[in-house]
Length: 257
Image (cartoon, rainbow, N blue to C red; front, side):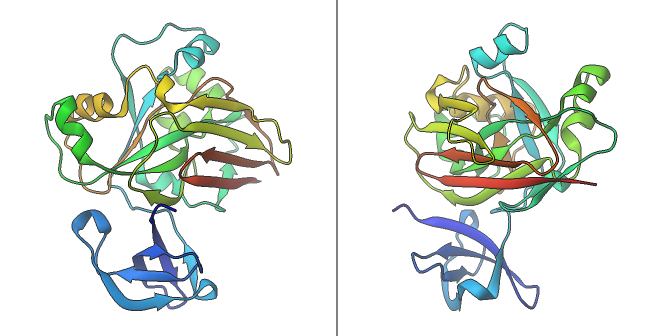
């Protein structure tokens, strides 16, 4: 099994980056792993910590309509270049965190996605250089107030509510380029989304290069790579689960504000 890098909080409120072991013990690191954090002698037992989102980004840069079938279901063409937008860091919640349904919206959608974790300061890099800037991979749900997205014309409000970026449960260093992404609702065994990540229009290396021509990416920043066809509505009480082969599963429940 690939190493699983986590971020946890102990019962005293101290936050650690660490390595999740098969026993579910966490071996703490002395710094974030992308900043050369090294293992320490501190071990946290499963009942002594809470799993947090696996990083604390300065920003989340997301990409719209990066799967052709999703662009089609939204009634638009595939963009000629990546369509990027920002989600605030305050939208991040961990796996098992609660997605809060905002009172301003009548239609909130799930969007299962692969997330990239940036490992070093990145400015104006080429696609060939970009691969070395991607430290690891995790799972995201780009939760979206679809009615507000259509009404506003730009996406800040629709994408930016607190809890609208579930992220986790951990980070892995390597991922099969053809790994399958699937999204499930409640107990239905049939996925509502299912696609291989190599079906992206713009590949991860290209996305990181493109974004770096616009803004500097910092260690621990997150890039969301887009969602495949099958986006749909969430209701109060729903449990939404996003799975990516080789990473794991990200599961969250929808509650009222």
